[in-house]
Length: 319
Image (cartoon, rainbow, N blue to C red; front, side):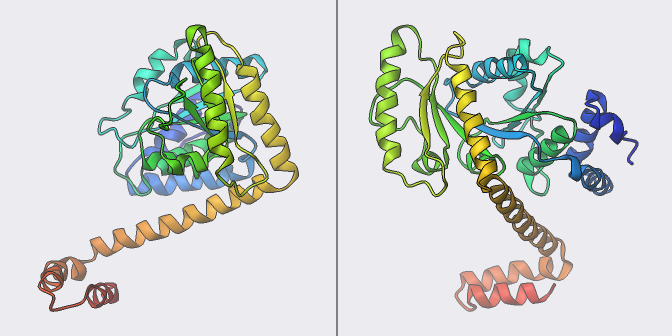
C-alpha cells in the first residue's frame, strides 16, 4: 500500500512511520487518496494513547517543559510523540524546527518521536495533518502524544479539539492580567501549570497559583473534571511527576465514566463536518460557472441591487 510497510509501522519502525507521515502531508491528490487508504487500514490500531495538548505564551518554557516531561515519561517505560501545530509559520516547519534542536536530549531517544508541522496550504490545514499524524503515531505504538501549539489564537482551539487533555503553561506572575491568554482558552483548559516555579520566583508562583485557582472557580466546566492549577519547574525537574499524576487521574476517570469516548466521538464528528464545509467551499471555487459569475454578483451586492442571500443562493444552485 503506497509502498509503506504497515507491519513495520505497527512494530514502531521510525522509517515506515516517517514515510507514512510524509504521504499524509503531501498536497498531491493521488497521495491524499493513498494516505486515506493507509489511515483506514490502521484505524483499528489507533486510539490507545493519551493525547495531551500543550499551549502557552512565548517565553513560558514550552520546549524545556516538553523535553523534561517527555524524558520523565520515557523513564516510566512510555513511548512519546511530540507534534507541533504552527499555523503562523509561512516557512515549512516554522519555529518548532528550532525546538527540535533545543529538545536535543529528547530527540536523541529511541522512545521519542518529534515532528514539526508542515507549512500551510491544504484542505483542513495544519490541524488535518496533525490529526492524521497522531493516528499514525498511535498505530506505531506511542503511548503519549504531546501536541504543542506554537501559533496563537485559532490554533489553541484547533488543538483543544483534537486532544483528550488540554494544558496551558503559565509564568509566575500574580498580576490580575491573564498573560495574554484569552478567557476562552481558560475555559478550554483542563489544567493550568505554572512553570519556572523555582528560585526567587517560587513564592510568586504560589501566589499566581491561588490567583488562577480563584479565577478558574468562577468558570463552569461542563465535564466531570475540575480544572486544576499546579506549579512545576521544568529546568529543575520539580513536580513533573505530579503533572503526569494529574493527567493519569484524568485518563482513568474519563475512561471509566465514558467521557473520553464521548469526547473523541464528538471531536471526530465535528471534524467531519468541518471538512465537508471546506470541501464544498473548494468545489464552489473551482466551479467554472461560479467563477465566471462571482465578480458580477459581488458588484450587484455592493451596489445593493441584489441581496447577499439571493446572490449566495444563485451561486450555490450553479453547483
